[in-house]
Length: 404
Image (cartoon, rainbow, N blue to C red; front, side, top):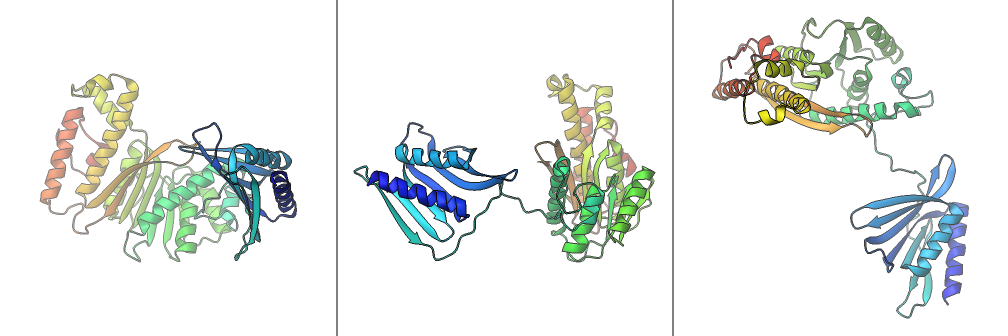
């Protein structure tokens, strides 16, 4: 009986939501007017401490989500089941309930017990697993990322996600290195130390390494703040020193990081890494003024001149040429390079990472030039001539001074 089956299903659905045993339901075999709609999935969520039903409309090429108050959501499910969808499967903690239209249009209902007990999930959005956990980390509280209970502040959500993405990228790069490689880490231009603290946390607490980590920062107040936080967190192998990247005395470095070091400060950082023979160099360049000034100064006519008459294209060209030359120079000194773009979050800008992984201990400053190195120097020379570049700052620091 059609009405009896719908009434019984309504009672089961309403009761399961009320007693907390509702897990999810799905509607299928859509016979409505929207040709793109395929299925509908419903789950219970908690939004701002209020229980609601979340509807996921599954189309051919997209998903649409809508949230409804419980009573309205139940009514909508029954209405859609009566008219547009011909089958609905409800899962509670202990059983499965199926209500379906047969070929004659009669609605039937059947139930069966589940062998495995299901668990409801009231999370509004599926939480992504984060390498750096928000709770139990005193430094995150001191940096005003979390409160005392480990809850991430609303205005710090983007920063927290950004930290995790950087650590996720670094973790994959570190795993490429031989075991025991990472002993000395330097973060050039460490700023407030968000990444420096997180990286120390990851290396020591999760990988069990005893690496020494140093943050280099020009602003003395930032250095004092970060050293105080390191003491509070009992991070004994973490320290911050005041000074410029250019003036930093190079000890043994296995991992060098420089995120958003402006213009030629990125070159200074790469130079220090090459000079120290770092096994891994990771930089996120910021500003590319030096090469842009070179291009504007010489105004060489080439195949892309019709584009670079526009300032925005010239700026983008300067970025690509600068970082491309940096990658070539790293390759000259025995590094396998990667250059890739990533977007930390919807509210943060795009970033380009230039990564160098040491592949040879024989090549470096002062080593004999190989055939491959000669080819790289030719590429650098030709690139400079094509774009009208008199010199690249990193090239000059390393004493290459390749004439264009």
